[in-house]
Amino acid sequence: MSQKKLLLTRPEEEALKDKKLLENLGFEVFVLPTIAFEPLLFKVPNLEDFSYIYFGSKRAVNFFLKKAKKLPDRIKVIAVGEKTADSLRNFGVEPYLVLNGSSDHLLEMAEKGKLPKGKILVPTAENYLKKIHRLEELGFSLRVLKVYRTVFVSYPFETVKERLRNTQFVIFTSPSTFKGLLHNLQNRKDLLELKKIIAIGKTTAKAVEKEGLKVWWVPSRPDMEVLARELLEVINGNKE
Image 1 (cartoon, rainbow, N blue to C red):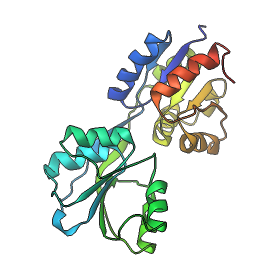
Image 2 (cartoon, helix red, strand yellow):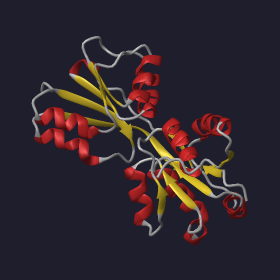
Image 3 (cartoon, one colour):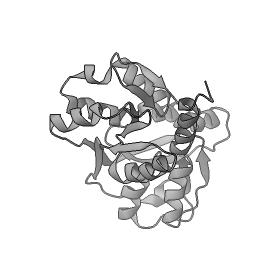
Image 4 (tube, rainbow, N blue to C red):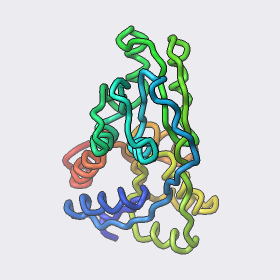
C-alpha cells in the first residue's frame, strides 16, 4: 500500500477542496463525508435589541445571514477564526472582532474588562458548546439561537470497510466527523485500530481518545493547509 493514501471524512464541499490540496502534494485521497448540515426553523429576533452578534463558525454565518439578510450598522459582529470572518465578508459584513480559534479568547477579554458589557446574540448549531454561557456570569445578556443541525451521512457498511482497507491515514476535522464514521462502522471500532488517525486539533483528538482509539498525529495548528504541509514533512522524515 502507498504510504500516502488517506481518507477525508469532512463535509463534501470542504473535502473536495482539501482533496485537491492534498493531491497537489502527492497524496492519494479518498473522500467519505460522514456529516452534513441542514437548517433549522427559526425566527430572526429584533437585531436592534443586541449589542453584539457572535458567530462561532462559517456555517452559523451562512444559515443565519441567508435568512436575516442584513445586520444593523450599530451591532458589533464577533467571529471565531479567519474562515468565519471571511464568510461574513462574503455577505458584506466586516467583523468588529476576530477571535483566535475559540470562545476562550472572548471569555478572556470579558474577564479582563476588554469587552464592554451588552446583549449578545449567538446563532449556532443545535448541539453547541455551553462554555459561552460563562459570559452571563460576567454580566452579559445572552440569547442562543439554534439555526442548523449536524446530521450523519450513512453508507453501506461494505463501502466504508473498503475505503478503510485502501487507506493508511484517516483525517478527522471535528468530533462530529469522527462520530459520523463510528456511526457507519456499526460499532466496529477495531477497523480503525490499525489506521494512523490524524486529528486536526486537540478537541477532535480528545473525542477519538475517549473512544479508546489512539491519535497518531495532530498538526501544530487546526488548519488543513498546515496539516497537509506538516503531514508531508512527517512522512518524509523531516519533522518529529
